[in-house]
Image (cartoon, rainbow, N blue to C red; front, side):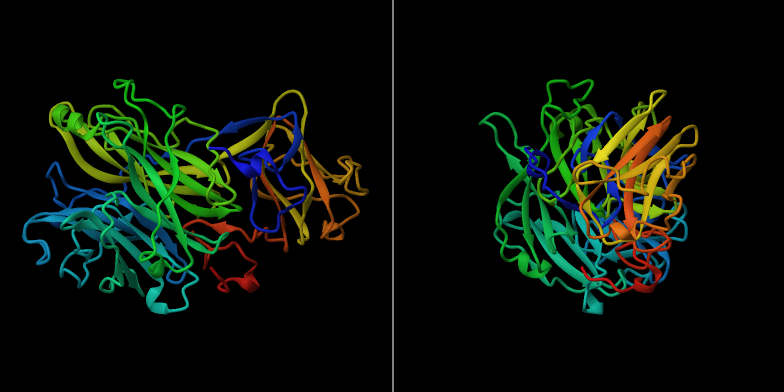
Length: 516
């Protein structure tokens, strides 16, 4: 996919929104630093959720307690982590599904590590919050909702009689009690079963991430890819859907080590606004196809890769190593079918929390149940620009800001970093010289840059300037200019996290005042 903003960057880049991630060369005019991409580290206590209740199928090989996109969010109003997930209810659990089937369940947590399945009143004595037979779904905590009854939105993909699949929209004030369908897609014979969606605040639009199957010839089965459609109103958009080919897997994506002839396919794409970009989690199917998986009694191999977009449509995927991978050891909870979760990630202190689903396999029993895991990444830690023994520099393109304090996320614990500010012509602006910069020799996700004889960079606000970062034995992950000394970035905080009361990292005085 050609990415227009990387091929032809604007002459002046505003940086008021969010931490400025160094995941591509959009902000970089020249550098001698090397870029590294980083993967999350799995939590030692995985899985954090598994099917251990009778209404989840308990010990059955088909039991599930895992988001199928769905969502994990931090609700700043009651300061709880909340998870919606897919479970396999056996016959007799709900009146809606006398023969059994997939239902939507709900769990909560105080710390994101230890989860509780509350007993609710939807299906009494269980944590089932919706009994509509379903496949994929997504739940979105909409901080910009003007109607309190629509604070949570849920789209479920479900069987639809004469046509294979349909999607239904439901709203909720508390994420537990859901409305009847507000609207349902109808007559879309091309709709697949693995659909999701997200809100893009940069475009002020809801995006439907729709499964599509591209048939290459009369022999091959459909190749999974994604269709795109956006609309400012989530409900209205479902009645006006159009098919826009969007993105798929390609030859650079990882191949199955045992099914090398299988062509990678894009199983799903979840996305969310993180700081100043859209973060995309690409669940890539490496094979084998469904009939072969059933015949061999193994799970399909899906792994999650990461991508980034600065316009919400075009994706840059510079690293094709699995961001969240499988573990093909006997009995591993995530042996196969690893997929992303709606909301993508949460910010907890200096780390990002990534939840993901996976399925068990063993030499003795073959395919087993599905659960939910967690992995940690440094905040902003998708990519870093690094210098070793030899000093290196990174100079930005011309940027403009309205804040007062320059902050960096960097690791200089074994080295040093200094910053100089240049005018558009590349001339150093006194007193913002590197010699006048107080050297940074720490490891911190939020560190204020200071110069001698000056309190902040407010004198440079609304001017076209360049930042030059000078590093030795150090790594730079992000920089930004904040309106106050707390280091708030005014960027978007994905699915939220401890300390946030809304969808942006705002000054204390502005917290709770959001628009979507």
